[in-house]
Length: 415
Image 1 (tube, rainbow, N blue to C red):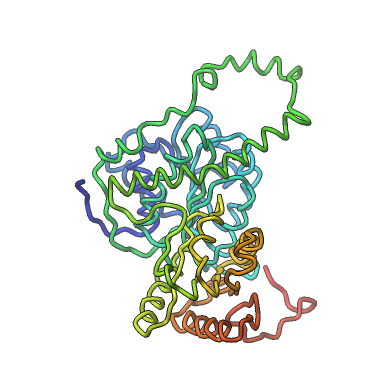
Image 2 (cartoon, rainbow, N blue to C red; image 1 turned 60 degrees about the vertical axis):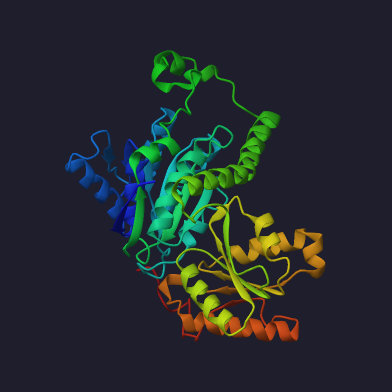
């Protein structure tokens, strides 16, 4: 399969993926670090390269999401790009889109939520949406982002899924860092991702007599009780069942284009590992480097990249760590989301609960705190000591914490 090799930032890769997916409308409110996505798409328009593409910049993120909901109802493939406080502002529309079973895609170059005031990265904005009903992917670099966006459209629009997707990546560190990206030829991508057909004739909003529909609205019967509950149940079941579609679409993408950025997780050196580190995003390449270095010294260590956060791939992770003695989660969010999700997964599996690995969690990199190879190595050393003792000194810990003189009754934040 012919490919074109480019040097792209994460944001540019998201824009190229939208172009290759033949997205018709991009809508976003510009806020660092997201604005480069729509700026890149606008350059394509200005150069005459994407005549069918339109960019809409509304007054705020809530409006951007509302527009995307309307576009999805009309069967238009679209992309929005929201992050930090902007994604919180659009929360009501984000929930509405999932409960309405609308296939649409948002990219999220993560930026920490204020206060304190910062422009740096952690994953709190992305993780804050974990219970909204969207499928959730997280990417390690621009190539991962390009490949994931294309797969996400096909997954979202699948008739057994019909749910929106968030594709996250680390703000500034991935969004503005250029790496080599292989872009397959458009003909091959068109075969992989045909034009959208998810709107059936009976749901064609352009064919609705809206004057008649609105005149009858006061007499419309709402959904209540059992109907409401079952519709919501079917939404959650579609989210769970999407794991099979994610794997299937990933296999197809790999066979066509050779990418490793597919599936629910990526396991590295886990077959005989005693220690396995679980992480996501830009942390993964650093962890993988440390794992490879320690393997040369005879340390039985492996790592897992969490590609998909919703549906949470508990079954796949439990299977990968079955022979390990210790799991270490590296959460770049203040909620310790992976630690909590994996703790639940291990507890619910009776075999693993009685004879499976210990679990140790570390919260790192919050608010842009550097994540160094030295820090990762120190965590591994603590893990080796934990295996010898048979018990973690601290099950969950924030690193590094030096201690500051902060009094919430006297010190002011957010002003």
